[in-house]
Length: 91
Image 1 (tube, rainbow, N blue to C red):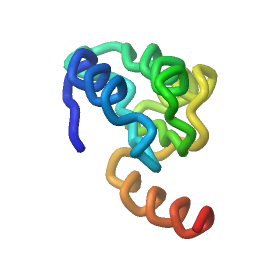
Image 2: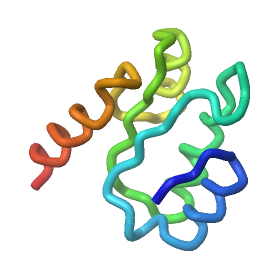
Image 3: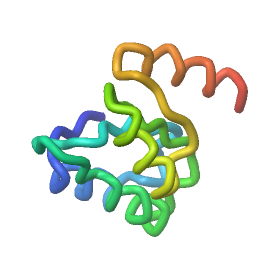
């Protein structure tokens, strides 16, 4: 599943949070500033129990997502590789 706006992400989480194993969360969704951290507690409140990877080219933004509850951080190009490693760990 793919969401490029906060609203789309909210809809997906509302409908399918319990089916999702892992989220790669960009710090900035259609914004130049971090705005996606609000999705982390919303995901948990909707029943998501998986891993959240903070994905950003800006370490400060990744740290913001970690403080909001993300489990790992990754540079954007490395996020898929980190996701595969994490999924292998939890199998």
